[in-house]
Length: 228
Image (cartoon, rainbow, N blue to C red; front, side, top):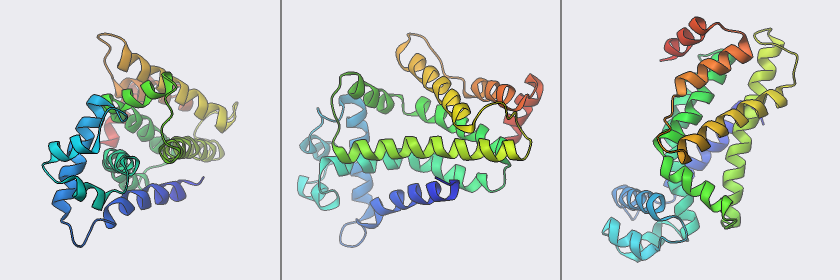
């Protein structure tokens, strides 16, 4: 999946959730519903949160929630998109001005920043999988598509970097992307479930830079600072 196609796909999902609600009902009421749902889903989980609880927390009628969102699954997808939106926007704006190396490093950083900033929501997803509690088909497909799109974007960028001679070519782009994601997922698990664990995205970015591009520690640190 090419980078532009993935960014377009995510962008259309983010816009689609809000466009349906414009018109008769104000955007303010939709925002209040999403704020309340985000908090409840994070603290109580998907299955334990009812639409009635969301209505009470948002101080709106249950009927208004169903006007904006046909089902609880649709509301949850809107919450997920709302959480992802600032990261998607930042990367979309920056990526066109960065070479492949710095795009990869930004993707690594955004992954870990999202985990750090939304730890409760990410922990919920993992808990559902560990308990083998199936999410609805629509939710599962959405999450798989987003994760798969992220992986394919890494594969594409690594392939382009190899063709340009920016990084080593002794491994396939798919293997390299899988290795990076395995490392990121390991850091995520440690941060979410190990007492006292902290998240340091800049360290992970530096290690990926050194491994994939052969950058020295000083060069890798400078690359991270140059991106901001």
